[in-house]
Length: 417
RNA sequence: GUGGGUAUAGCUCAGUUGGUUAGAGCGUCUGGUUGUGGCCCAGAAGGUCGUGGGUUCAAAUCCCAUUACUCACCCCA
Image (cartoon, chains in turn orange, purple):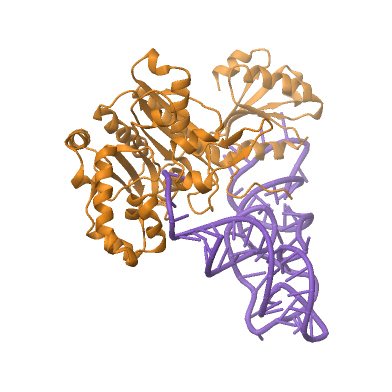
């Protein structure tokens, strides 16, 4: 038996309504903020990600699905979407058509990690990117959009954490300060963290080793070493969030795993999922466009993990979707009426009604059971004396009563559905 | 890549100290009179007990290996 590849999942009909519900909500909220959908290929040239996300990041160094295609090009299944969106904007000069582009997406992503609760190798994200503006309104808007979507899904146990990474120059100065602080504590750090001293020192804040956490307790914080401009920008973001009454906490230790972030970063966490509690992450990336060889265009965005969000919704029991139903089930009483059943069904189906018939030659009783199971609001009995007299019986499945209609007068039947 | 847990019917799970033809609930199918659902009742189908070895008179049960799934670490959505 061939099975689905590790870390990939089939979404069965019994689950699809949740996905549709979420997707529809995302589209509605995005539309209300005037974000427009963009779709990019699943495959990109590998260099887009290695340059954009950063060679030393975990995503690029060990998690990408990369292969050489038949034209000897190294291609990669997209592990995230921001680099692709920025590439598309540059490639199609969207930035020259209008100064600000507000874009959103819903798309599968691929990372070859070990699966666990809320983590898959093929997973799905929705997200937004605002390209071309540095105004803190946009930073705040990302958080607002994400927060509103999660709240509209009925999620309660969520926390918004924000931080600022500042501009590269002040960050470099701070890294130096942090390094001095850590230098004489080097031997006490975990092996992983020691490696990060040189590769990505900020991520030592992410460590879960008790000893590392201890040491970092007293470490100097980036936020204390930001330049004035960054502080003002961050302050404005906070003011906006306060004004719109979105609860948040500043987490000076919040750093992100992708290299392109500057200024504002944020995460939305849920206590209703397993240990992979980040439902959503994002921030500002004013350097990304240049890093991938394009024009200097600032941007800010976020991405949210759909599987994790749906998991949180399930654990919080946050949506109760109505049962599936169909409008009409046509019961073929006489076996000879196969063609007539199809003909009649088509008349209703072309009126945009949701109609089902029997395909298994089953008894009237079995067809009735099926109609009931499908949640049919009404059934039509086609056959017997009524049919000989040019009539059909229409039964209301909820009330249980039935009426007789002229088979030629479809419109009258439809009026009674 | 590292560690823990699990593996019996389509699903959720029982299966006692190893001992007859491996069970339940749900689901599926058929029927409960000539053409009518839900509730109820009756019956049926459906299992190489993850796979491969070993111990034993005898293995779903004990041992070893292997695979898959799962949770956690790392990192992230």
